[in-house]
Image (tube, rainbow, N blue to C red; front, side, top):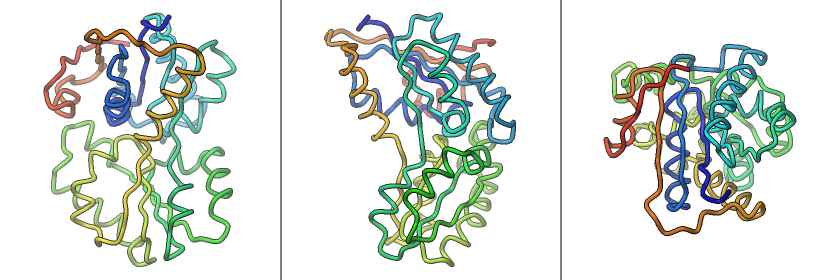
Length: 259
């Protein structure tokens, strides 16, 4: 089983930021990445629809013999991962906004969270936020429109800068010193965010933590691939593959797959 691939899915191309962290930490692992870009973003769709889409993605990856599945989507994690774990007999790794490290390290006692509507309105996010934010202020901001721009290859567009400037304004007025990125698409905005934020504001995303958790779970289930051979790295999208290829620096082929 150790040679079986790790399956990774997201509502689109953003989860490739998670894939990069996993591949950097676990270079021997075979991976299959599935981008459901035609349905991105998942946030506004409602819990039942998000669960149905997550089931569809999971079943495709299980049919490809995946040994573990990473739900590389904050919205799918917060709305569907409990259901997936109850339904399928395979380990799942989820993605949650990294509220805890920001809450523990803030000096101004104010942190910002930029996330999708589906994440911010979920019960799991609410519970996590309540757990770690008793004595601090959390400025929540829905990143409406950001995912669509990234999915359309418009990361560095004027419209993107305009949206980010608008969304960061209330956070900066509240004196945040940590910005938590609550969507796997958002790490691709870090270069722009660094330009827009004061130097004292630190940016936190979940990629490294997810990669470490993936390694831990593989070790616990004796599923690590220790073969020193070139891994099979497959990428599929049900929309324009070029957008993902560009995010992967054109190092890998992305196949169109209707699913």
